[in-house]
Length: 357
Image 1 (cartoon, helix red, strand yellow):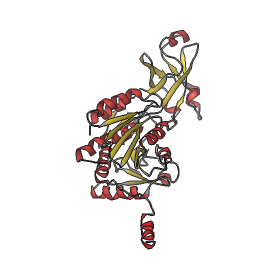
Image 2 (cartoon, one colour):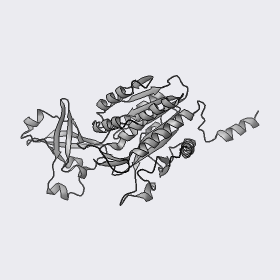
Image 3 (cartoon, one colour):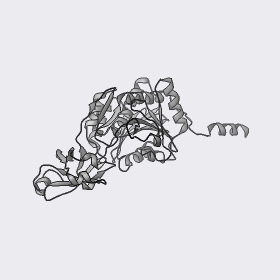
Image 4 (tube, helix red, strand yellow):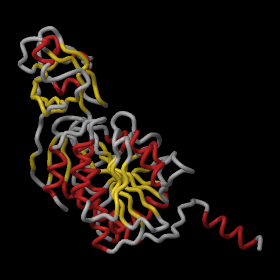
């Protein structure tokens, strides 16, 4: 596992709708490993191994992050903004930010005052960004409406193999899908592997749709973060007891293929990798919500990384969990047969066929 590249991914701004700089880095990183790339005009990058195999496995990890977008500039040179994805406005107060402009990064600070601090229903549109500009005209020389904004927070390593940083949702998942391909190649995998670093998950899930339609996979493994519940006031009753460092999280729910889940759980046990479970009876809030609907229906499993403080500038996850998910997926790919049957009725239909002969 290449931690240096993971940290480069975390440090590279990639708000939903402006993921292209990070995607270019992924292409450069993967070009010596893959057989080919597939890309599309919406911004997806799909790293492909064994494209001639009849069995196609889509690994999907979104590469975009939440943020803000400039909507207007006041006469005093302050920037007004709206949300890009599901931000928590109160967490931006007083924080340093980066405005992504056509000329490069411009630094700013989200302003804070008594009325904002007292506002219990704060919206993104209540926020303003201070560039140090003294007028609208001066600010317009460096920024414009439509520019994206991300929190200016760096990563750091914590105790017990934990890391903290902005946008671990879902740099960790995107990193896992490309590293799982690299590891599967080392192990001699022969099935077709399509590692898609998808775009737009935090806003429209456009990347998931485009990738699934393009690849037309036999099955899909979606890799994203999920809410850890191992800290004060976390709601374990809603989704289950999930610990950072406790291993991969498999989702149970209506969009999940049970046979895939069982195979992953059995393999994890053989590899001595602990598995956790989350309840996801309806929508999962991941690319899987769109992928499973495409083509004639795509069987999938959702493998998640436990994450504390999601959608903050200091999310916390475990590198041990990341390593275990990479190994689990890689070993799954190596052991996957071209003729895999994921129908829940395979045994019933098989016995019926014998009776009608």
